[in-house]
Image 1 (tube, rainbow, N blue to C red):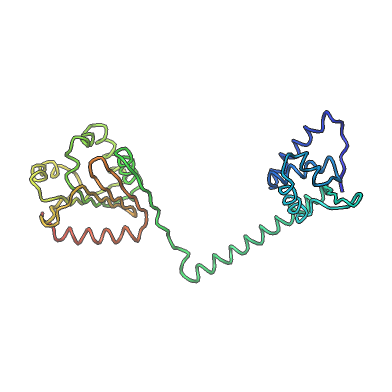
Image 2 (image 1 turned 180 degrees about the vertical axis):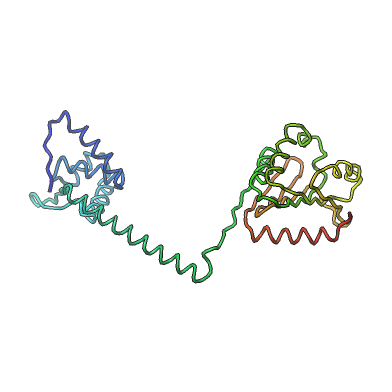
Amino acid sequence: MLKLSYNCGNMQNITDNITKQLLEIGLSDHEAAIYGTLLANSPASASFVAKKCNLARSSVYTALGSLTAKGLVGTTFKNEIKQFMAEGYPAIENLLKKEEASVTKKIKSLEGIKETLKAFGNAELKIPQIIVFEGQESLKKIYLSMLREAPNNSTMYILRDEFVWKDPWSFIFTKEWSERVKRFRKENNIKTKLLLNDSKEEHTREKYYKSRIETEYRFLPKENTIKDFVIYIVGDVISILSMEKNNLIGIKITNDHIASNFKNIFEVAWKKSMK
């Protein structure tokens, strides 16, 4: 048991400092406040502690039970009333050593789990990363990030409707945007395979498509025309977009298995399309 004796002028500051340090070593707010109070006032009753810490007696008893289990608080009786006493530095040191041993044991167990996962072939399991985004600005950021993070010498597969020719998307043909896109494509040597609707609008743009470096394009069969819809695939990333007016929303999925299957589906459509 530890009993501290200081003049009243310094006592509150000392208690406050101790409480902060106790929080840093992992005690809860109530545990730190109660233990700090007991350091300065042991032995003390639960009623005294509750009044001193401005806590409900039920909360004090819960915290005292936890502190006792951790070996930081002992008990005695005075006039047949149960009193609580704060144990000193050795008790805290012993608690931390136990926690250290527990963490070490958990780390060893983790290593065992790792080996087990490898044995069952799950060590390389990749959980898909999924991001939902809304609005034109989000789409711009997603598109640029796909280009920036694309593997070297990769192909971007694009299936889309005519949205790029609508006024809200005219920025695509500005010098600033074009240069950013070209830079990423050049840095990562990205080619493009583009599937388009077999529409009058797209046919009038063929001169533009033919001028695009490292770009192949084909037209979907008319019965497979898409509307307000876009898919981008590059590397292990797929972005699926709904381009409905006033309701632009998309999903970005990062997963090699899913991306590979989408590429296979794209290639099936590519073979059935018209040059």
